[in-house]
Length: 282
Ligand SMILES: [Zn+2]
Figure 1 (tube, rainbow, N blue to C red):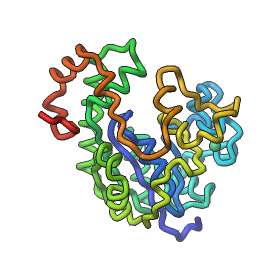
Figure 2 (tube, rainbow, N blue to C red):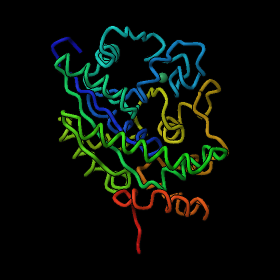
Figure 3 (cartoon, rainbow, N blue to C red):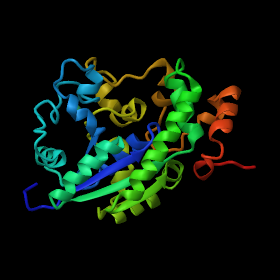
């Protein structure tokens, strides 16, 4: 990318475990786009005090054609440096943290570039089920509260954001992907192409993000690679090892969530979740 090209930075906000890795992989397949994963992890590149999964490409590990020779000069806008390094003009970032997004968005505006914000929502019961599975030892009420806080903070960010923006629902993306991705492309002024929906066909180099979804997208590169950071755990193996790689709605919460967790969620967040609740049939 030369200095005269206008750069687009597509940033995803919302709560973790809402499908942002899937969305990032899809958008990263637009022509001229590069998906960084969770860009905030770029701060940890080459920092040996950080665990490998936080400081290296999740697919390649340390020997990555993209990240192994990238060094962020923090005096200069991040996305411009990544765009120059990867010869792209659209950077997609699923960090979600509002402060991080605000910083990147300010950088883009100062440089005359184009910041775009996507607020990705998902039924809170699905989000919490996924977190309970991953962090069984953490207090359930604290996790529910933390999800609500993240949604509130994302809402504030979204409302105050002055650039192009769109809010979408994960379940909508998973059930009618082409329509939703076309809507995002229109808002972001990105050209849609059908190949975007084949998210598993991309050559992805994500920093951070959801391991299961990344595994589906990079299966051929990681399955027999002893250096790969991407490994399924017994907790996630059954679901992702059999995953076809199509975009499909993940409703595991309906069968996995325990009765007490379900009751606690309804108590604390039932009303809060109303406009995000999906597939309630009375
Ligand atoms: Zn890589």
